[in-house]
Image (cartoon, rainbow, N blue to C red; front, side):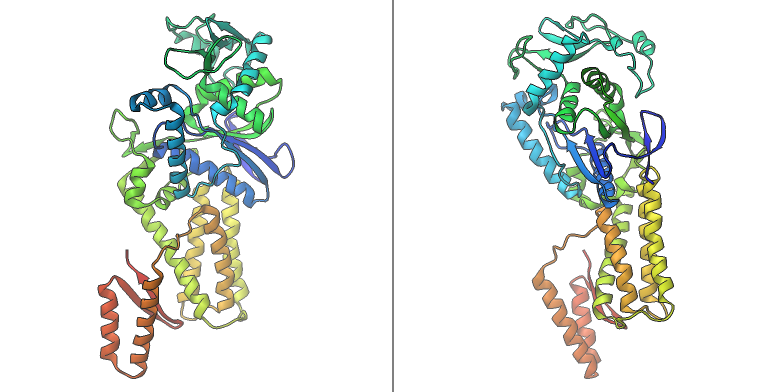
Amino acid sequence: MIQLYNTLSFRKEEFVPITPGKVKMYACGPTVYNFFHVGNARCFTVFDMLRRYLEYRGYEVTFVQNFTDIDDKVIRRANEEGITYSDLAARYIQEYFTDAQGLGVRAATVHPLATDNIDTILDIVKTLVDKGYAYPSNGDVYFRTRKFKDYGKLSGIAVEDLESGARIDVSEQKEDPLDFALWKSAKPGEPSWPSPWGEGRPGWHIECSAMVKKYLGKTIDIHCGGQDLIFPHHENEIAQSECCNCAPFARFWMHNGYINVDNQKMSKSLNNFFTVREIAEKYGYLPIRHFLLSSHYRSPINFSKDIIEQSCAALERIFSCADALAFYVKNAEGDALREGEEALIADFEACRADMIEAMDDDFNTGGGIAALYDLIRKLNQAMNGTTPASRAAVLAGKAIFDEMTTLFGFVKEENEDAELIREIEEAIEARMAAKRAKNYAEADRIRADLAARGITLEDTPQGTKYKINK
């Protein structure tokens, strides 16, 4: 039984999708005017992992993640560069996919653009105006916040509390300071689209409501995003969607916690703002993924040089085990289980069960990864103990190891030079021939030559292993 914390109910609930065996899931994507930062990466990576896990548990997941390709930041940046908003957005959408692929974040089922869904946006705005939930004002269209009686149910913020801090911008012609924009009238030099209320462009909140309705339907299973989106973005999505559709918008709301940098809130003003591209150029992408998944998704986490280097070391432990397993099953003996090895395999299977138990309990990726490290410890003991395990037993453990590392996306890219590998294998064979001829000086020379090139040899009962030190 999978239990997830639902921001809407402020408690953990059993996850039961609307349609048995199928999950409709939406995540708020990036505003494409720059490279995305490590805070954005947490949202993208965490909910990619959620999708992976739901599929691992047998669900068919339809996952939609949008691109906001029109808003003030996009327009401002495009004007600064003297290019169109669409050219700027296309560039950073491509950069998003470069970084996302590096992080192991798979493409969504659909990646819709706000500007490709203007018709659906206008249909929703018109419906809200016709129902009296929204009103035009000098080319803008605003949502009547007070008219939605459940406003604040996601954030827990009462309308009265909002009212005390509300201010009306002089440029806005609102009936009430709490009302928010669904449609914005065109400004000189800005891109715009025709509407019943004049040329303009969509507000930020309305695009997600439109894309959910178009690609997933009126009610979805899971809506997710960063904690900073709970209010006002997700609160406003609920209001406009439920008033338009007369149906619940999302059954589960999931939000990941913030990232601090060196124990301070990440912000541009503190100059502690890091893009994923900057970090990956120094450490690679997978250490970032490992860092982001090693803690519970709802907890705040701290980013620092020391922590990312710890993730590098942790991944090396995983990759070393992968290399050892590949070598062992290729060279070890024993294609049948030996007496008592059923218990060893049961120990391996217990690690998988521990991972599932952790992940089923509010998607505890940290607990799931801990179970992976427990499996690595048991595998290393099986391969390196006084009486090494049979090939058959280790092969069974390797299958579970491969299953878990694939699930978490901790699989090393195979990018080693084939010519270098051939040279190493030939050198190992020459060294073994020298040892068989009792020419130990030549064997030592070959080993020393490889060491000088950063290649370490290890003699084992199954043969000689090598490691290329980066």
